[in-house]
Amino acid sequence: MTTPIWDPAQYLRHAGHRARPFADLLARVPALPGARPRIADLGCGPGNVTAMLAERWPTAHITGYDNSPEMLDRAHTEHEGPTPGGGRLDFAHADARVWTPEEPYDLIVSNATFQWVPGHLDRFADWTSALRPGGVFAFQVPDNIDAPLHALMRELADSPRWRDRLADLLRRTDSVHPPDAYLDRLARLGLAPDVWQTTYQHILEGEDPVLDWVKGTGLRPALTALGDDPEAREAFLTEYRDLLRAAYPSAPYGTVLPFRRLFAVAVKGE
Image (cartoon, rainbow, N blue to C red):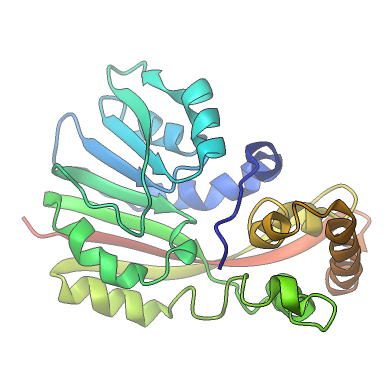
């Protein structure tokens, strides 16, 4: 899978819908052990949801980590600095595939990132070993790789016209594991896990809103691969758009995008 080039403005076009699962995740995180918590956000993107951590833990020192220069530039510009509660919010470049904590944390959290990290289950031991007693590891990931928006994207990329340029670039069905796999791994690491799924029924507005949504996330590898060929890029988008229109018909009130997500909150023993 190619390393995608991210577009913060495109990603944030659906910021409200994208932030809701993170708010639901944080609602299940218990009290942290430190009075001035140390928090890491893996895959912080443009920093808009990282800022939500400062609202929940106003005295915390929070660092958002991401490997996209474009996303980090937006985060530095819009969110970095002291927080009103006396904490601090900063951002740093790191790749979750190799990032290893260099200090203890009260909370390591991630929002819609691990689906881009092959072998992420094997990284849990390194990350959770850095938690203080009573610390928390919490994350959510999209759990809809078989939904039409992904299935149609893969089928189109594997078609004769696009196979040579796009085959094997997109996320596959093993990019996210079943809930019991996460629960088992976290429990075997000595944490107390709570794992669940939620399907959101997002009502999207505007013309071709599902295409607009996926252009900010799952479609990024294809858009990156075709970035040097605008004509081919538009041809691919047109074909994909027509498939999405049939799969997600519009209604007078908007277009419904069912979106299942997987959540986990795991607490380290005292």
